[in-house]
Length: 113
Length: 115
Image 1 (cartoon, one colour):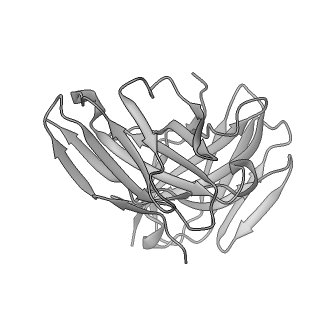
Image 2 (cartoon, each protein chain N blue to C red):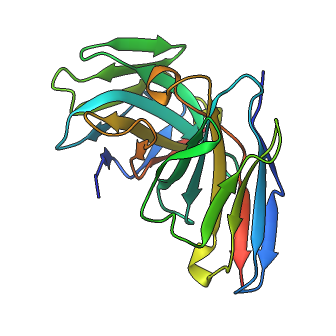
Image 3 (tube, each protein chain N blue to C red):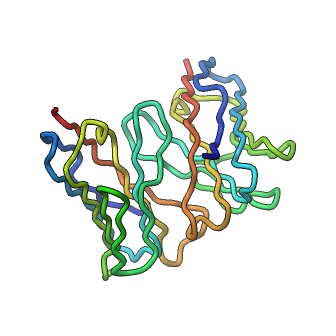
């Protein structure tokens, strides 16, 4: 099936550090979404990107839709303990259906106070 | 903030039994979805539902699965004869319009354990 390659798989950082994670695909995507999942909870939408080259911020979070439409990154600045969780990229493949949101395997973020 | 509500939060069932997972989507949303997440793995699409019919389903969504909107507020996922490999978190989601426009709102999930 369609793969979204998300990296890194996990990160251990010190509070206050900046974080960067990314997703790549061999296929073109129409949208890129970044979700955060806390233990025992459903994914919560952080940022949605709809146009190639788009750069969007949400507080300390910044994400970009790559100009090739095959990648996206998420940056978190000045991390805090509550940033701990699993971050998923997700997207709709160009030419794909509206129903099928494809997820990456997630980046598990741990923050040491 | 409007929420997608799922019940139960955890269900344990014996292999071969039928289970029904329940969801109450956000009231003005028109598109409904079920996803599942096997422990430690990525979230996978099962089915999308619009205008009282399935609009798309994945390979995972075989004849053992069915969905229904029995009334104006509930959206259910039924697994007719559960297998051990059906053990997973099942997430319901809804969106106001096509998901490409707005993204989803997910519920907190139902953890299904098949023993």
